[in-house]
Length: 130
Image (cartoon, rainbow, N blue to C red; front, top):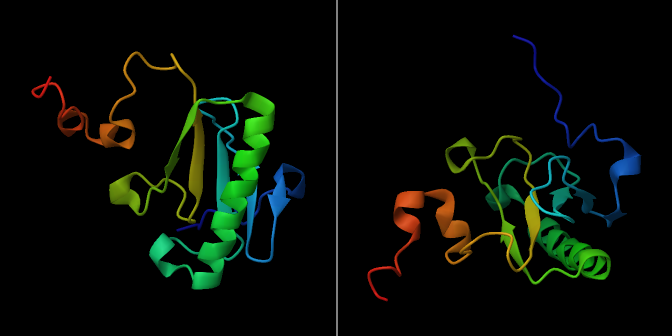
């Protein structure tokens, strides 16, 4: 069986918008909103829970940097920040990455629940309370 090269380990340098010793950030190749960015460790590691404390700190530093860049360029009204950790959680590239997803008023009819919508049948817990 032929192993497929990791797209984040073989990423062309022109895609990198910022970096530090342990991580870099790029714009998502398939964005779900303007400014959708990915923060990625330089070391090939699959899970957030396998990242070293130094890598985690570097990722969070770049999350702030990417957010600052997105703020200037797109002025979003909010963000979803997420990690799909393992195939069972929807991870399609087996290299840890953090999604920074800008959100805008009106981009969805009712954005309540945010990341809870990964399991739609369990997302809306508030309807019975209203």
